[in-house]
Length: 112
Length: 490
Image 1 (tube, rainbow over the protein chains, first blue to last red):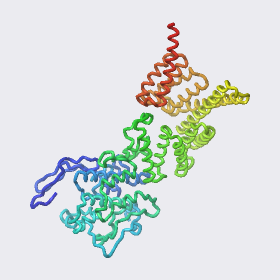
Image 2 (cartoon, helix red, strand yellow):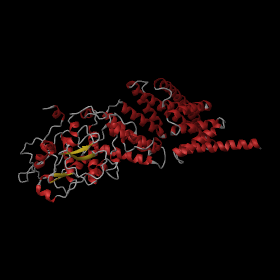
Image 3 (spheres, each protein chain N blue to C red):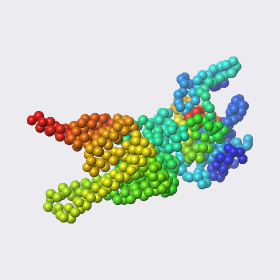
Image 4 (cartoon, rainbow over the protein chains, first blue to last red):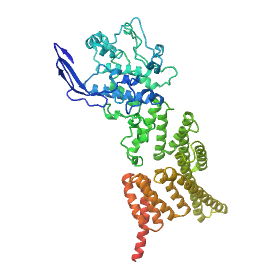
């Protein structure tokens, strides 16, 4: 979004960005005085995952459990790969993330 | 110290080698204006923002599309390895970190050094955004590291990692587990000029990548070695399979111990590959003896692994007997020449005796194993069917062709249910059944061979040795019954 006087112009991609590692923006607009952006639901951030704030996600080995089972290296590689994949995809579409952090990423499929 | 902190690797700046300089600029981490605008919600971006995004002077000149995202990605990697954010432990003032050179990550004390991976990471946290790679470049290099060739990073092939593994499966089920092999059918392993060559190449690449990234003594690396060893066994070169099995035994002994199930399975694989080498029959049988005795002690006589080894052992003994028969037959051929002496005749007799003894030994062992397998894993199991097919071969070597044909028909019925009609094993059994029927003088054998040959041409290809074998049988049958029918007509 860009500040343009009293009103915000919302710049969105022309078509919905489809990539397994990128959160799609479904809709955006104005609601009363506010701006809203409707995006795909992300149940878990990368930070929550690696700090074990959220555990027991179906189909996803817990971070600590993965260490015990010797899967940690493998999972880190998966995360690296998926983050890079998502980044390369959005960059290819001419979009820059600008705020990539642990709180903006979700494991299993990393969303940016 | 909180629970979360206890799980992390201790943070030590001297190890991480972040350089500070009193003369350098103060780098402001985070954008205060944006934080004021967006409130606390933006604070999470602190520590992840690229230098060129913080320094107003650089911002003016920066044409670094996507490069700042890569810096943030490097910060995430830093967090993963050291357990805390790059600029953690810094108060409000110290957040203005001065950097005089690129951030270099080094392995922590006591951690395994993985130089190629660290070289890959250390290109990312470069202050100069122009020399910093893009996501695409890093992604492609990542794939080179993993030895996975991908034409474009945004393709779904980028997600090569095995979902089954990530979903918590302990051991990937087969060589196609690593995702790179997805789409390849089991039949592809046997088909010439097919994706099996790609499979072998990729299996080699995955092993190499896992050795680099995970180290040679990692469970997944060992798994890749095992898969590649079996692919070499099927595809050749055979000597590489033997070498890999030898390595597997060595690594398995070191990693798991000499009597672990995995180590013993590798030893059994080595024994079997050795048995196929005609020069090392005795050595292979000794190895089988060792593995089997250990498995009986450790796993029990009726453990599936022990039974599989026993079946392979029985097959190796049969093979030795078969070689003895072949040797005797060759000597008999030389009987026609003048060089045939009494000693050669004695040798021929001895070889035949040895062959019969070996065949009987193998038969006994296979029969015992078959009974055990029937009671433990059931009659309609692929391993049981395989043992039964060896028994059919043993009957053939003993001269009981009728019994052999009967058993082949049973094996065919089981394999048809278990593997399906187009499976290479089922078709091979059908072909063998056809051979036996023709040997018994049954014309139905021709139909079996015809059916097997037609399907093998599709599934395995014309040049596969199974296909050629069924064609040979078909030609023989046509010649035989063609002659007979001509005689009857005349």
